[in-house]
Length: 150
Length: 150
Length: 150
Image (cartoon, rainbow over all chains, first blue to last red; front, side):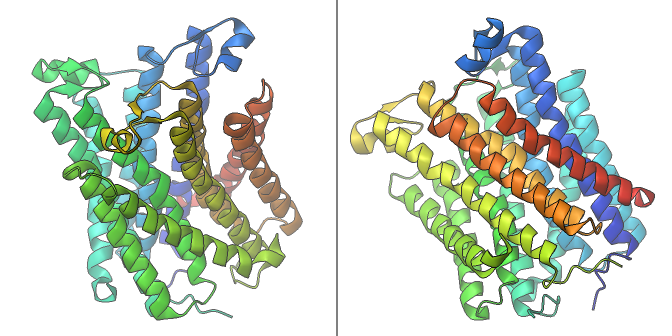
């Protein structure tokens, strides 16, 4: 049976990269708030009232940050669960750690090229696609490993 | 005490259905990209530039896929956590496996009737409602089992 | 090594507050449906057809509930994973339980002041900010504890 002890270096890698990804996801909330304050554009009338700002839903800078945020929600929670399940399949430690590292770096770059310093394509396609492919690979490994339990 | 060993068949069922749900959720991302390319409608100017497409936020086909995606985000992560916690309460294995199977089938059907082949109601109400009711039931079982820890 | 046995009172606290937060998150779905029916405004033509309602994407009451829902998605899944990882770092039980309790109360209040009984600021800023600060604190504790595994 696979050991999922906290002493297992892969378990520790999973924990630290999952926490870094969570902090990265959380970072987009103040980034949105900052964009709103800079442009004085808000989603709620009670927020706009504080600084005599406008209520607007189509500011291009703010909507870009919001799309980056939504893209995180579409991707990072799936990593949290798939990577945890993948650890239980007993993969080669160095290989799995490499996947976790590349995944985390990719998602951090995704936020940068999408919302912080918008870059022309294929910057965002790559920063989205490589972590996405890792997640599909990990997910298929989990399903194949436990396929008899369906 | 309840065994949450990886040898436990309910733990294995949880793992495989959670991974299938994650892959199903991830599948909606390329589905959105495909709809965007077919209709040549994008959310970002740098994407539209690649194929001389339009930037538009109200294309009915694409917005439908995006609503299906958001509905997944409102539902699937809550299943991942509630079902894992439910396994720790030691439910009857066959019963819990049945709930996991019906939940997974329901969410797959939800994507199909919402975004792939839009069907008239009550197709989507049922494909949403049955998994939703399972999640509420599982959540209440968890809260009742650990109520003394509040 | 830290015990993550189900007998551990902090593990039980984590489970019960995570389940309460999941049920709270799920509660926003019927709240949205109810607002749609009351105002007879829907996102899909097949839903509007049932009651001869309108398809509209800018109803202020419904959009407010949807923003509260999205805010939950941006916050609650990150708590589920960070709080679970935090438990593995072996924090003082009473302190961690206090954080979990305040977090849960804050997120329940957030939904109330955002979507049920909209209140002027700083009601929502506080109901968002205190749980947010707890999550950042917990996340940093996890990263610092496992930093050697990066």
